[in-house]
Amino acid sequence: MTVLSESGRADQGAARLPYEPCVLLKLGEIVLKGRNRQHFERLLHDNIRRAVRDLGIEIRLWQREGVIVLRVDGAQAGGPAAETAVGVLAERMTSVMGVAVVCRAVRVAKDPEAAIAAAIDLVAGCKGSFAIRARRRDKRFPLTSSELAVAMGSRIQHEYGYPVNLRTPDTTVFVEVDQREVFVFTQGWPGQGGLPVGMSGRGMVLMSGGIDSPVAAYRMMRRGLRCSFLHFSGMPLTGPESVYKAYGLTRQLDRYQQDSRLFVVAFGNAQRQLASSGAGKLQIVAQRRLMLKTGAALARRLHAAALITGDSLGQVSSQTLTNITALDDAVPLPILRPLIGLDKSEIIAEARRIETLAISELPDQDCCSLLTPRQVETRARIEDLRRIEARLDADDLAEELAKAAQEHTPGRG
Image 1: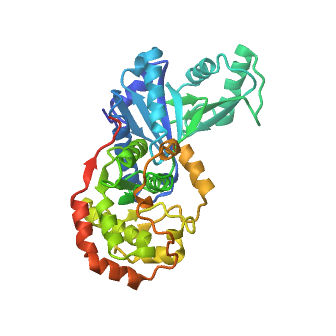
Image 2: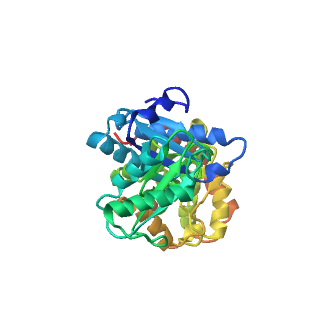
Image 3: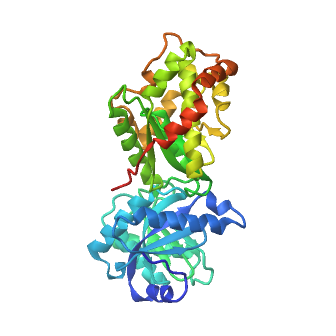
């Protein structure tokens, strides 16, 4: 994979071809950053390279003002192969955090006739009305934005007879005049937006097999956090089904950050120890605290600065405000809860959108359903929980569990 600057050979490429298929990536909030904006952009470049390394496509990446241009090696030859490669590349870019809009475009010489010819080719076979949206970044271009739009629209009308509709067109042709070439395209797809993964540091997600925690992980990735995943299975008291689900969920979320790591802890015996210690109604909150302690121990090894959970205030008995406060007391690390104010229907809608819902709904035996008391304490006292943990040496137990965690790498494979 090659990255070129906007000088040297890159200048010569615009003059060689009538047009060249490429991908334009429009940036979101990155453009609002100040002096450290280049750091955000460099990290995004690294994430783009990581996202496409399994495709076998050599790309050239240019950073422009608020736009990244991705060219495919060999695309100067045009043809179906180049179009296919650009299509695959564009689809992959829709999952990269930090990209707001993904556009399949053609890159042409900085000449009005070349731009008009490309637009005529792009709208061939379209139905209904059309409009031209022109933007001239380089004011030295011989036509203004409005003049270019009029000239292009007139030629398209003459060629195909399409009616013009500037308010609600069926097809919109976008033209962007850059410093060295012109880009022409007819559509864009929404990206993930947010910040490049890794910009905000590292976090450890407590990943159940349910609906909530994958959505929480996605939201924190979108805020620039690189996430590792920790799953607690009920083994040896249960089968491995929940581990398969956690693996599938991590693999699905890996599309947004790549190189994800999943750690699995067999938690059944620890739950049994808690139950035999007289936890009673505090069993659920006590085992949640032990999970957090284990997560914090593992996070120290991985240099993660926060834990992430799928808690939503009041959704279940362990997620009352009093119990959440008791959970926060368990570890010194901050516990991030991006779903805290969402209801279940909102969480399900987002899980469906990021395509984790179907995996989360697969049947399994969740470790949290084991040894559950008839009544669950909704107002846990921190002093009572600490006494239970003292009887178990909970901090040492958490360290042992963290050391015994099995690591998996469920990437694209």
